Image 1 (cartoon, rainbow, N blue to C red):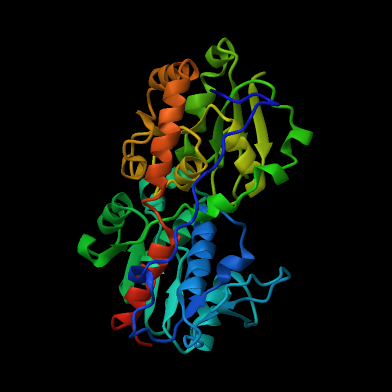
Image 2: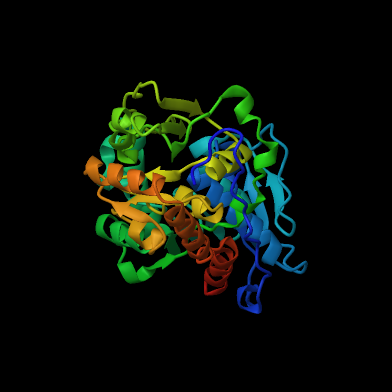
Length: 384
């Protein structure tokens, strides 16, 4: 049943599993450093990936792996506690200049790069490229960002010792647009565990926004490939069903922006905290995710982990990530989406079924398993 203000929220019974022996560090692991530039950046899905993989690395590494460090530019925020991964601030500089001209010359060890970019110069490196969107959806990005990435990423692929990405679909796109074969790309997906640490009870969102009617939740920027307009175009029809559309997310400086739709039942929240996301997901009829393309689609797995039903686009990586745990629709056919929303609104049984299937699907994606995959890559012939 959809949740209005004051209603009982969905519980989140999932718990993080203990670390099995299969995801322990390999015995041949060498020292390495992590490119910590992400600590100076706003947290989008890419930075979330880096933070959570690093957090899991810190849990998996043993005390004897004391040579593993995260190198970051100088910044004002306090350093996170990554347990066995030691944070070191090195300078001067920041941004791309720091990454290209400080990091490779201050590391002296293989570098693990988790956020699409890496030094062009230097020794051995493992690089995660999350998607090929600058090639497949160039109109979603600012001209400067688009041209820079399209020039930089081929160099990175040629220089890297290992390339990873987050889904089978993303690997296929990378192999299509960059100088690497599909068999050379390792799949190390996003995980779900972080969403279980969110605390809906700590959110103050309802002090600022009175969400009194059932609502469809959407997350993300107004970048064209996010395709928010497909759902907002249904605002009038959804209003007749007493359904609101609630949209959370920052604009994102790297993206081109589509206009913000306006209607009486569309609520733009802007940026929200993780605890706010937990509250929003606990009360939403569903998460709607109408993207034209995604390297992974982390909000889908976050919603599933929190027990929120998902209605998703059937394009790019999303069928792979959703499995059979979501209602799927073409991102070009608003009528399919309206049908799914109406059906879901009228069936508590379907809501409960999707929530249960979603929790099971989310368990297939683990930060710990992906972190162990990086340790395996770093143990197999990656030397500076």
